[in-house]
Image 1 (tube, helix red, strand yellow):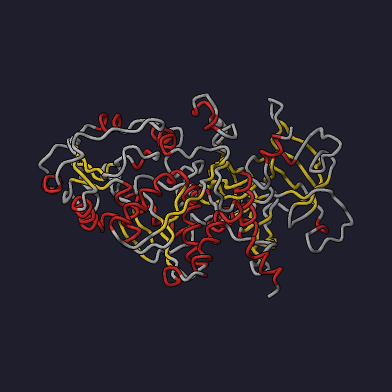
Image 2 (spheres, helix red, strand yellow):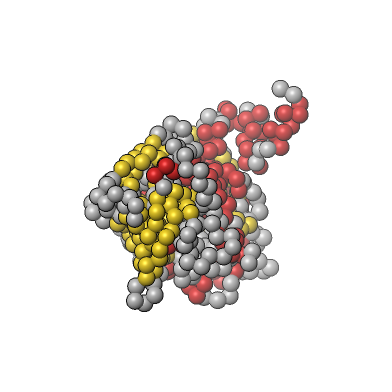
Length: 559
């Protein structure tokens, strides 16, 4: 390999890969790479979590390491088994299988022992101060804090009080365990942080076994150490916590896991705040956490986003140390690129107008062959029924067309995809002057693949046989917000919702779609990408629009 190639490969590494390769070159951790994805099971994962999943599992895969899924279940008030199950489903759907599945609650006894060790070393104490008093003692970023009046309790007294906290002898909020570090530290987190608090709440795994629970800083680094995680990767908001992470590991003399931070990425036209998303759900602005307009992984799965597209999106946005906002058009581009490769092409009409072929034999049906996916030569062909009465899109006909309108018009020609050329002879209207039917001539010698007519229409349109078409509910989803960055707008974020983010229509589909199941990918020819919704039942088809065929928002912004 040439030096230029080596330089090019080295330059293409992100900063996390550079750290890992440097550690491997120096022989650290006996050449092992162990990462973890540690979500708190208190809600549904969103696209930001998808980045963390892909980064942690991706690094483990690249360097032949391992990646654990560890549920950070140290707050029994907000955590539920439902969220545990949904998180595991999301991880696996994205294409990753954890090497191990752990819970912080697996280590509650060990974490308690760590706390006792800190007390014995004179590095932790029980504080009777209220949360408000503790906050006031901490001072400000420009003023040092002051010592708690309980800071100099004896080791024996602290051990006794901490054991009685565990036994449930004290009221919730009456006592906490704090680390004894430095009340004048420039890092506010190092000013005697709270390590344990009393919480009388039923835990989804340990039941009522515990009434004291470790806070994030007491649990996270120590769980990493127990699992011998070599590269603990988290988002930038945890950078100030790294000093405490290292301090606890050093004082406890346990495996030296190391924390590294990357920047979270926000998406345009959405919000990532769990509080705001919960508000949208609770106030019925959306139909639930998996509403296809939401930025959750479960919502994207329901909308029809392929997992490969999300992985490609995460790869394209890369890993950075600086937070920024990513244009959702990039995610949609990745979705279209993947769906174009894997989607079966089918016929659907969303806004129908009837065409009657006056010279086609009444009662006759013929089967016409059409390809399933031109991007996949192995996808094969299927047959479509063709008859005297057809549906076409209303937008494919204009009675008084402008100069560059090449679809169907009075006296004009158009090719029916995989079928025949037709000519519009007569427009039928109702009493209100609305067009209800087009009477057309078809040319028998213009059949696709066998055309000898010599006719050269400039447009091809899609169609359905009226007697064979099946009905469906189609949900046309669009971006949830009207503005690029709702979080930066001073108005109430709910005022910024896009009123056209969901339009429900009744549509006609080709008969091959009668037995579809959720999770399949289709391109409705000329209309967009669609997927069956889990609401689909026998005799009741429901399709979600995953994406339009092109970025209509970019076109709208350019106007």
